[in-house]
Image (cartoon, rainbow, N blue to C red; front, side, top):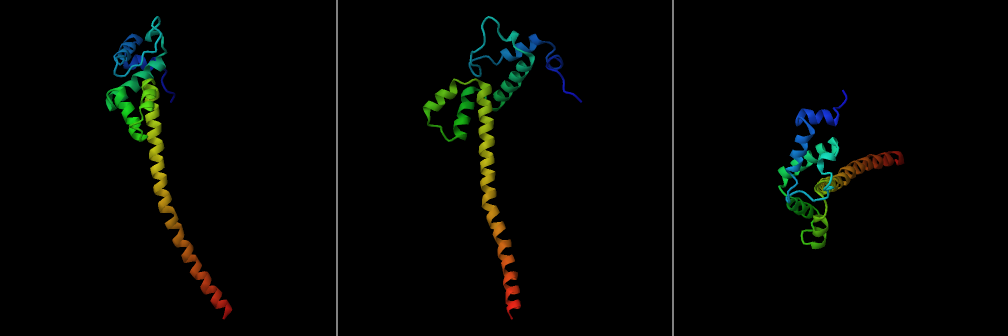
Length: 147
């Protein structure tokens, strides 16, 4: 089955685009929003798909972190750069979608690195035992053929 169009999703969840714009504008306070919109056009001229993505993303960030500053703190902790003032300043200029994408990719990368390190530690020990066991029968076969 094909997925619904953004317009159909807007109509199902919000009723019309004005209600979706109003829902996204609730997040445009100082806690989450970086003012980069065109003041003449506003959010009413943004596509439905982008508004839906923004609403979902802001809702998730608001639920997990509460503010942009807490999200920035979480990124700095993941990367173990909590004392890096320059990096903090650079991150504070980024919008929430970019920050959250950075958070998720960093978390995924570090989670994958830990799993790979654990696998590397276990793998050589598991491979070494069968190699030694295979060497013993070869030695016995060599002794029998020599005698």
